[in-house]
Amino acid sequence: DAGVIQSPRHEVTEMGQEVTLRCKPISGHDYLFWYRQTMMRGLELLIYFNNNVPIDDSGMPEDRFSAKMPNASFSTLKIQPSEPRDSAVYFCASSMTETGELFFGEGSRLTVL
Amino acid sequence: AQSVSQHNHHVILSEAASLELGCNYSYGGTVNLFWYVQYPGQHLQLLLKYFSGDPLVKGIKGFEAEFIKSKFSFNLRKPSVQWSDTAEYFCAVNAGILTGGGNKLTFGTGTQLKVEL
Image (cartoon, rainbow over the protein chains, first blue to last red):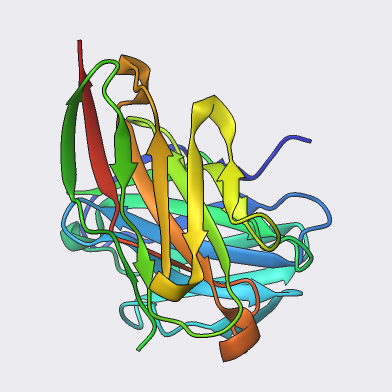
């Protein structure tokens, strides 16, 4: 299995620009999670989906953040407009109900100038 | 509120020293417990997990953890650390059975381990 695939791996953008991060979960996994990791705040859960339906988005910091999962094999996290404080590594993870173990992608390192 | 506490934020050890990282959680009842490791510049990877059965769980790379229900603890241990164990270690709990949160994992704040030669 290819594992959780995220793109882009690195993104550098200017403040005010739209950023779209992408994730392909492991086939057969019914949960998908978006996390953000920074030195100051550690690992934060932003939102998660079960069977493509958003279950808990209470971790999404502001309305500038949105996430979608149009089908079982694809999810996006969008930031519009981006701000320097959004700079972080964004991880996508997926899991199966039966095991509960999260498998993480390699992460997308976002730098907003 | 649900929480996972990792008592040590930074640990520095010499090679061959023994390691124990503390983890406590605040849920009652049945939980699933995990330790993840994040090597510098990489993503989180599973070290070991506990769902049920023998409370002493063995994971990869010589790590083990013991679930002590009465203490709400799941401490990570390794008898002899190596320089390559330098990484950040995260404890996590799945209490979905209690909270209806499904597979949602609550992570601790992490412990940064540095092993010196």
